[in-house]
Amino acid sequence: MRRKLVVGNWKMHGSLATNAALLQALVGRSEQGAEMAVCVPFPYLQQAHAALKDSAVAWGAQDVSEHVQGAYTGEVSAAMLGDFGCRYVVIGHSERRSLYGESDEQAAAKVKAALSGGLIPILCVGETLAERETGRTEAVVSRQLDVVLRHCGVEALANAVLAYEPVWAIGTGRTATPGQAQQVHAFLRNRVASADADVAAGLRILYGGSVKAANAVELFAQPDIDGGLVGGASLVADEFLAIARAA
Image (tube, rainbow, N blue to C red; front, side, top):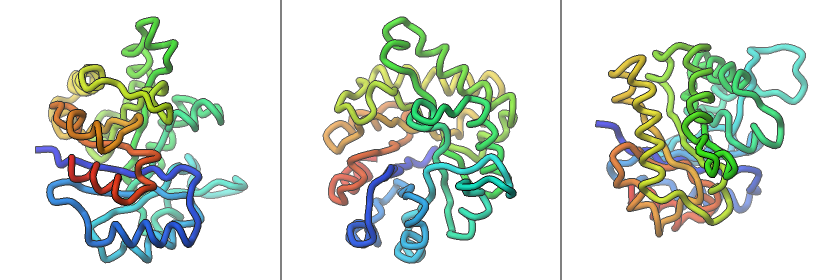
């Protein structure tokens, strides 16, 4: 049985002072039956490591370089993240794709680098509003997923997490209905199953897109939704913990 997972993506938020209060609220408060993690900005990895190392809450980063090392100014490698005890890393978030031009191929290379470095990649896929309204949701998410399958092999997903995040629902207050989300999650699982049924059965697929305590119970009740990739709500301890309780 797949264990539910709730991951907080802090994005470019935080300070040493505000982080300390938020992390302290999470220590010792992991919800029974659900795994919790927070993915924090690079400068705060040491703070997360120190605060959470003796807790049941894991931590990780929001991006990773596809390169192992070298003359890549500003990049951070998987090995560097490992030095700070990271378990997870978010890859291919829609903001990385849209704002910084990250391609499907680059996301796949980052998945491979993360796995080689002992990290669990959280691969994000999702469609824009225009793509949904023109009936291209499945074509878009399958394209994003298939590049990773070709580059890394389906067996790589045995050590990865998939996150479906409809771009039109991120930070907008709009949320895919549980039925809409379940339809895409089931499609993704079936696509992986066509290559390896066992990997598909064990693959955790998270929903990301304005997840809140108010909608988490209904979302997480869907058979193919295995938790959430939570944005703004992960910055409020009580809200994030309530989402974890829903999981």
